[in-house]
Amino acid sequence: MPYKLFTNKHERKIKRHDIPDNYIKIKPIVTTTRDSFFDFEIEKNLRPELELKVMYPRITFKKGYVSFQMGDYKYSRYLKDIRPEDIEYIKLISPASDTTPSDTCIVKKFRIINKKEIKRHFSFLLDHSGSMGDARASKLQTGVYNAINDNK
Image (tube, rainbow, N blue to C red):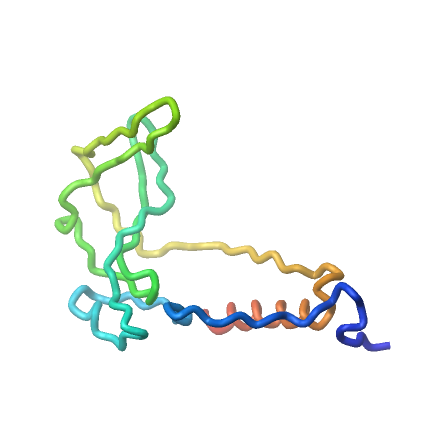
């Protein structure tokens, strides 16, 4: 016998929320040069902002490694032509805690290593519990599959 929607007391229709004014739909990631970074259609009067984000810091007393991206995270646009000469200095800041004040350290000796091929692995945890119901669980699974398939 096929499952009938909304036959269980715990199953409710999903409420749609209003889209925030500053929401920008996710687009494919674009890597571009600094000359063409701002050459695209701006949405909702939100100018792109060039930001640097540090990821995966691995720092010990004698040595450290850090990955970074330079770009605009709202529009998923990133620079691909950052050169070692573009980096004037690297400053490490340790956050303050209840017992110690924050501390700053300028890194005097550093080397930039370009990493062309970055491999990533993703895991998705999907809710297939009874409260999801078969229809919503199936839609969720199909949506994740299509999102992965569309962004090869």
